[in-house]
Image (cartoon, rainbow, N blue to C red; front, side, top):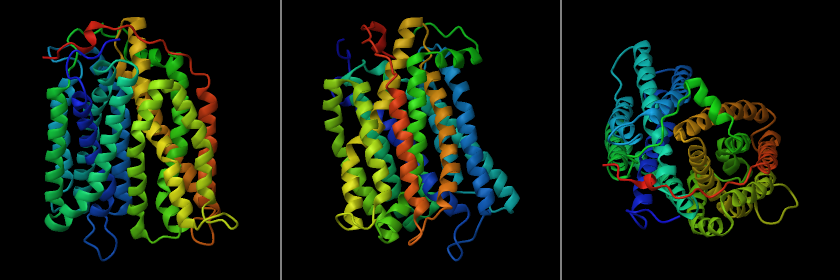
Length: 442
């Protein structure tokens, strides 16, 4: 399979990654500040809403995100335009997405019930336009890179940019809020994300010679992707993995402050070390995937995670070598390569699955694969929240840590189940070159 006909080197992967950077910047800022902004702790501002209403608004937005993904995917897969199937959604959705983000931070001075309606509508708009932009964006990956090392490299740029968006939100948003206020922060980050997403719409090619539009109905399109054996195995494996990692991710602050015994101010230092180590592992991941293939490396990663993740629960136990802080940092280093693989390889593998389905059926339904994945992962996240709540009732504080220590054990069991499921993943043939993959999008 030959290289792309244009955009050699790192230009196209970097440009594609800009979309992940912009989207991650907006989403992470909302996750970081939304609750604090609308329902601040006592003595730290005037509450605009009760915590319960804030939770309802955020949950409703997430529901809009989950439910809007499949219709957007169906529409994108069937669209035929001079600008391709994906770029129109990104170009038209990006300004609306940025506008909703900006509006979140400038609510009207109104009674609580009116503020709630405003917030609910704005969040629903944000998450709808997030689906409208990011589902077609994800579905571009099979078209802009050939299967194999080039696709893994592009997915690595995408994952690295997404991590960069998280880092930028954590570093830049507090500075802007402290010096200019929430409104200025929303405007600055909204405009920045809009520019990054429009760079994707303007610069990343979207094939003009599209495959045939899916002939199935909306429900039939969902059924068709679920009947793909490789996708079914991949989806169950990823859902189990997501269930476990979501529980661990939600307790990272507890791990740092309770098990490692560090003050809350050190959470950023520990997470920053994990961020740096993960980025440093990307070149190793690219080299390993090039030699052994993404499915085999992902299977190895699941096996390693099944050993490392439960070890988190042992931090600070008596009889272990090193101090609890050192134990935590050792695990940060050991988990860097597996985390890099889990951020990159699923996207590359799903692109391979979607492309092979297109070649087999002659119909392009790449976006629906990503939409169904999103639905299942949203369900896994919800299940993780429920399971986590039950486990933490068994103890999540110094001197009473049973529940907190059981969380990584449960997560490790989920990862092991993901590995056992993924062993049924069928071999994927290397697609023959298709001239239309990288045709100019105009």
